[in-house]
Every structure is written in structure tokens, then in C-alpha cells.
Image (cartoon, rainbow, N blue to C red; front, side, top):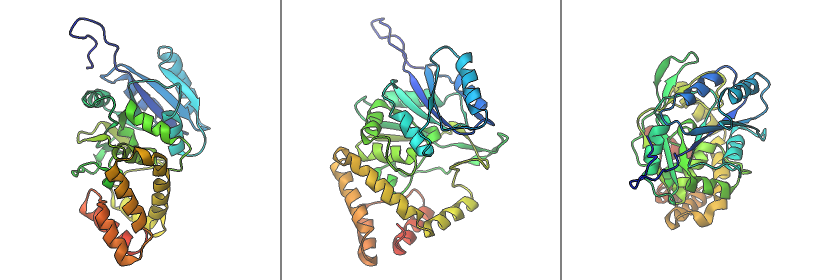
Length: 319
């Protein structure tokens, strides 16, 4: 648990975590997620919920918990109605939001009781001026909450060279500090990024921050037909990724991410500016120079299969 008393006996304010919860027609599982917040071993949290135009009972559920919990524990906002990434960024950039740490949350998962305490413990070990992002593996469950497996376990170090081509963890596991949030706010909420979690990984690593990938699952990640973004652990999901690649999705995603990173170019480390420049330039080259410059950029994915897919995308101009 976080310290609440200094060595000289003076009281220290408890470390507060703002849970950034985005919702859209989430009535089926939302209450279970909110209950898992209540069960956290780290008790100092508050929920900032942004509903993106739900037409079911989602808002009613949120309002019920707003009445049930102490005043100020749950704040309800209206989302921008521009997709899940825009909704999360609108919350992260809220000027009135003040906390020690910030945790992204989906509407249909269940958090393990030690999720926040594990995140806070690691984040406290990082100097406050260093952007820091905690993320974890997940425990996959079906619509009924029954465990069906684990998300892929990644062993290579987190880095900007990896972040340019892959996100190593779901946003539902991510917790970050004020230095990281300051970068998100500086870049702004109106960006056309692919996903809020991938963007956070790129921003923190690119700007000289540190990322910790906890191998212990802290979230029960629900797999169901309503998921906007699911795990890529199944072969069906992998084939869907390949189909999207050939349709040009990866190239479009890279266009959008590279454009967004331009907002923080001066905050990128010199080495990461070079990596980004090599990556961006290589994408416009003919085949042989393209492959050479992509290799020299140092980009990589976490698995052999992922790297083979990256090479294939480069060969066929889909990167």
C-alpha cells in the first residue's frame, strides 16, 4: 500500500488514481467492471466516465453508482462521439482532471484486486519528471467470465522502435503518471491516432520515458461479439490481421501515427527522431532501398511471426 506517513511523522496525502472509463452501449458488463474498482486493494481512486452516446442503460448504471458511491467518486461526461480513441483522449486531456496516476479502463472487463496497487508500486519507483507507463498481460475470459487463456507473453524490451510497429499491451491494463499525461495533453485530443493505447506506448517511449510490461495478468479481458478491439491471440484474429494488412490498413495506420508524432517532434529523443525519420523515409522508397532503410531504422515486433509479417508488408509496399 502507498505510504501515508513520512519518517518524521507528517501525514502524506494518499496517491490518487483517476480511472478513465469510456462507455458506449455497455449495459451488459459495466456493473461487473465498476464492482471490480470497488474491490481494489489500492482504495484511493476516482472514476471519470465518458459516455459516447449510449442508447441502452449504460448511463443509468453509471448514474446509479454515482449515487451509491461517495460524492465525487464518479464523474460523468459526454464523449465527443468520434470513436473510442477520441473518447479516451478527450478524458486524458481534461483540464480539470487532477490525480497522481491515470488508468485507462474499458467498460466490459474485470480488474484483479491488485491491479492498481501493482501499478502504483512500480510508478512510485520512477522519478516524477520521467514519463512512465505501466501495462500488463491479460487473462482472457469469455462472455460468461470463464477463463479461456492468456494474452501473448512478450519478452523483448519495450522501445520506440517496437512501438512504431506494434502495441505490446491493451489500454485496459495501462496506468501512467503525470509526466506521461503532460505529453498526451501537449499533443492534443484532436489527433487521428489509431488507438489511444498504442499512442500512449509510442509517446512515452519516443519521448524518453520508461515502460514496464508486467507479466502478471491484472485484467480479465472479456472476449465477446461486441468488442471493438479484441485480442490477436487466436488464428482467426491473426488471419483477420493479414486480411486488413493486404487491404492497406497497416499503411494507413502508419500514416496517421507518423503525422500525430509530428506534434511531439521536439520532445522525441534525438535517437528516436532518427528512427522515426528513417522509418518514414523508407516507406516511400523502392523495394531494395526500402528494406535496407527499414532494417537500419531498427524497428521490430515482439515475435518471430510478427517480424516475418513485417518483412512481408515491407516487400509488398503495405507498410
